[in-house]
Image (cartoon, rainbow, N blue to C red):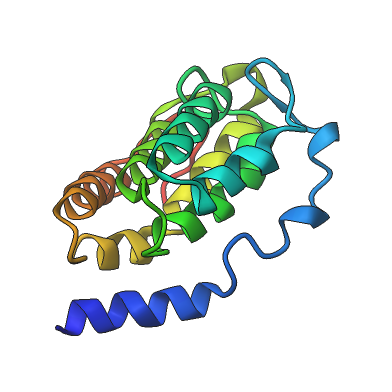
Length: 162
């Protein structure tokens, strides 16, 4: 019961889902295939879409932001991914957590500052991942436990030791 209360309070601390997304200049950012102008739409579909729309949007975000490499759009998207991960109404929370782990595991050697910032954005959410590891949903629990393990064991050339 305590973990459920922590998850509820965590969602309240994070605030309104996707708050501030419109302040980001997405058109000026890039992802794996070019302009990040469509990232807000995909984040919104993950947040409020039905299971099919959410999964499709999450698949796009994975390809664009983290499965191949990390980009400046990835850095800006990670806080919103954390919002989605802690929001119970999001149908694909475990997939969002898996995307956060993919971001942590991928690089962009020519842009080490971008890589470091993307990784730091995921690493900074460790406390949220810890709470999610005790969530009521077993898929969310499993994905969060794997993410906590990845965070705790993270080592890369771009990220200096803590």
